[in-house]
Length: 152
Length: 176
Image (cartoon, rainbow over all chains, first blue to last red; front, side, top):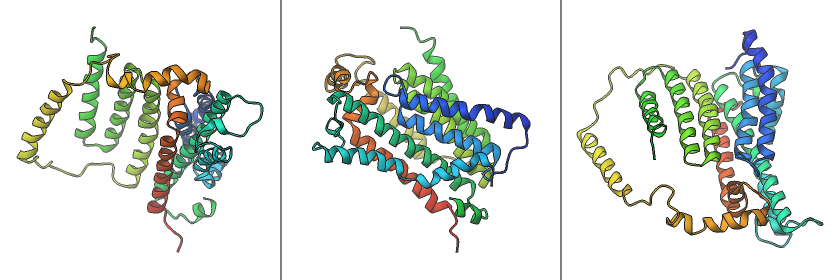
């Protein structure tokens, strides 16, 4: 069972760190095509920023409300990834062949670039939600989980 | 080629790996494992796999440490095996022999950075030459894993999803 941390230093540092980590995760996600990084790392960092919030402020604080709401999105990332593949099928190409995404006014290479970005977002959502979900599973194993279950 | 950076790095890798196994306090072992991941990230960066080093630093040193610590809080932070059992004779003789065999086989692997090795003349040139005009993605690693090998990554994402589902199914207490 996780409780809120008492130390003022930790709480203040968390207030600074969490938005910074989230901002960097978004940067990593959208610059994965130009620099090292990508969907997986961005997802882990997004998840980790929310885990930091849970560990510092406790699972019942308003700071953790977003993490709890995110738990409902389990599997959403996979649907985004596979859905982009399905859109490629509808566009007349092979599964996950982003060149056949039905988008007017885009060249083939731009479509593939967009497909990479969309699927990376899918991976990021999937990994972030899974990380938070595993932390909730581990942290509340054997605890009185009734109030948690009503949220999660 | 000098080894002033690589040899201490590899020595630190082995020391941290051995320390994580040998130390009695399991919380210390978790943190030693985290530092091992940081050294491993340096090794990946040295080999040129910056993306992989990134993942190793974030997952191995960050997320895995949190998972291990949460698990230890639920169980017991101390190693209660008072006396470690002696390894059997077959392991003492067999494992070094296996290591020697692997070293002997490693002698036939292509040189590090060899431009004519099979790995760098088969499909890698195609990716390197076509990635930019095909996908407008300067980072070739991203274009390979998300586009050329997209199906592979889709299944990996499914594996991550399955891991989360399995943890929830096993660990979360159902309301009865």
